Image (cartoon, rainbow, N blue to C red; front, side, top):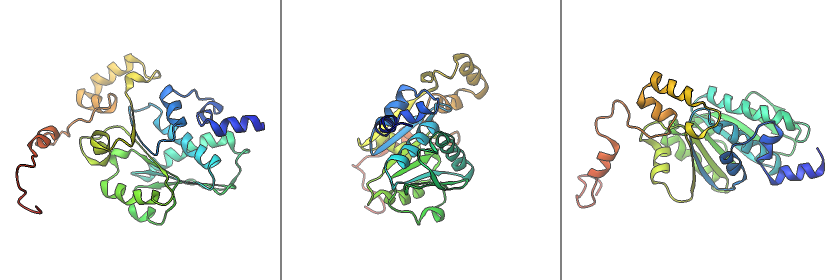
Length: 250
């Protein structure tokens, strides 16, 4: 790679996907070029949210050393899948950014950067600090206590946090941050109808096969009530009023 090409890649993270033979969707290119500290990606299945965050992770490690990038998912299998996307992109740039060590869940570059993939267990992540980029995969399924325990990792480094997920009911930190969170969150919503790679005929087939409840959640990115919920979220919120003194903890 020439010096000019390397400089262009450093200045434009969207080129990570382009150099790997992938044409980023407009929302992907916009996200890659953004330096938002906090971002939530509410995306349909197969929208490309894992691919774009893998590109973000790789660019951070290559051009902002010594960066520590953590990929956190609810399970080891999910962590491994996201990390494999990172390695697939890295294979295009391995000569440009040589590795010092590489395992199934970790990539150490000679420039001092590290990309580490972890399952969502508090005991496996407590030792990390100074995180440059924290990516929470399947974020709607990451428990609140785990989310609250990883946020301090960004306190000193001033690092970035990206949460990506399909919806999983009207509950948890991901839903609350999307629905009621502060304005410092950059929110990106991509439904199946917005994805040019998903054919309308396939979506109609999925609607018939899955039923309306699952389809709205998986493909239309709606936060729907859980099937066993006795009282709806909106009904509960409407019942809360500051005019009534709490029985406990008032």
